[in-house]
Image (cartoon, rainbow, N blue to C red; front, top):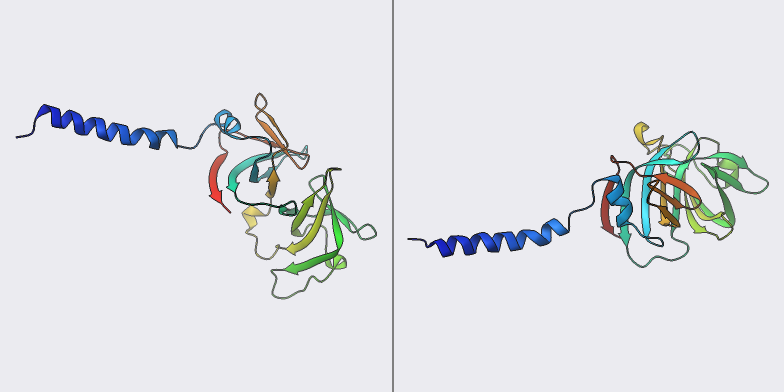
Length: 192
């Protein structure tokens, strides 16, 4: 025969074990997500550009690890290519390609060997360093047009450090680009 004390003790143990799990749940509303982020934190943003060149965030991935100044990344449709300056833009972020940059593509039927092979509208991933003057210095350029699903072709991805947070407006700035957090924004944690 079980005692009432045994049942109460078991219920208290289950409750005590559940408390840490509740505390570890990720924020689910836009306001809670903004409050969970910090300036200087490394994150990966994925979202859809707005007409004003800001971005509505679909996903935020919190990452931890030992990142260096050349670990920044940007992905999206290239525009405003300037072969003379070896520059292009994703949104309004100016990307300067270094003279020693490596080029690659995921397409089977073509090669991307140098800046002259890049075209406006290509879905490019640039890896490199975001400089203090607001320019992204790319060391690696990858054409990902062939491997990107049609639904993801309208999205951009940014990986780097958070520069500024506006909790009232629910916006975050990274690489000079404003990202808007909504209640539909998903937050994930990852170790890189």
